[in-house]
Amino acid sequence: MRLCQFQNRRIGLVQGDTVRDVTACLEELRPQRYPYAHGDALIAALPRLAPLLPQLAAQAAAIPLAQVQLTSPVANPSKIIGAPVNYRRHLEEVRADPALHHRQQIEEIQRIGLFLKATSSLIGPDQPIRIRHPQRRTDHEVELAVIIGTECDRVSPQDALGCVAGYCIGLDITVRGPEERSLRKSLDTYTVLGPWMVTADELGDPADLALSLAVDGELRQSARTSELLLDVPALIALATSFYRLLPGDVILTGTPAGVGPLVAGNHLRATIERIGSMTVAVTAG
Image 1 (cartoon, one colour):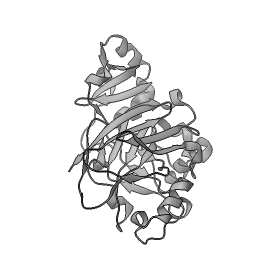
Image 2: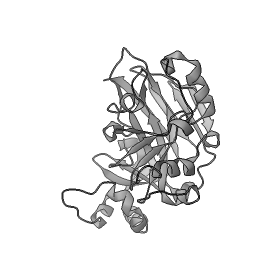
Image 3: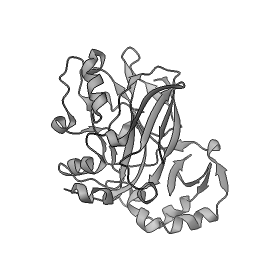
Image 4: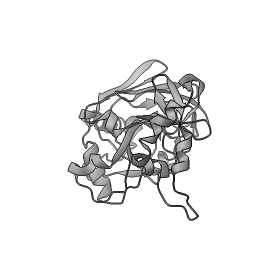
């Protein structure tokens, strides 16, 4: 299945170039009272809701995707986890360019581990990236995003894919500078997820997917997930060796070589094989 969220948190089942409103599935979620549980209740309930969604879709009108505003396919992740320099060629380009490393020693991901992004940075593809510090370089980074489907802790690589609800395209937008990654990547609008979530059973093995990003029609990034230094199972195992993952948590798996600057007025076109494409505008912040 391909699940999206649109307009004011409507839930949609994407079929071709149309979407069918299945928001009524939210009536099946268990009521919550304050203090609310961490994690995304819809993602947690997907195994139970999966048989209901096609039934609701069959009763709904087909709405052209071009007529809806897509928001993030995950509403409430408790964590957004980043994987720095997880492609060899990107590691080499960062080490070679002072504008990227700012005199800092850039280590392999196996040595420096992961980092966290603020959940308040999250938007969907039909919301613009807002450049907050135009006097500094702000870069694009296209990544495969992994959406966790179940609570998991200390998971082995062999069992890791069983914890995944689905996948989407991720944009990890970054202000260059000497500060810690978590600060420079956590600005409002600097995490884009979309255009929808493809469930794990539909996408299958994420080990060799083509991904690319173009800015105003110019191809800047192109690679395959088979080039990841730590693949999806290894990233899940590493993350869960430090903390529990909850339904709706997102792992951004790392960006390939070709990162480059953005300015207001740009349009990004990001594509991942077996997921789709999304176009995201850049504005002044």
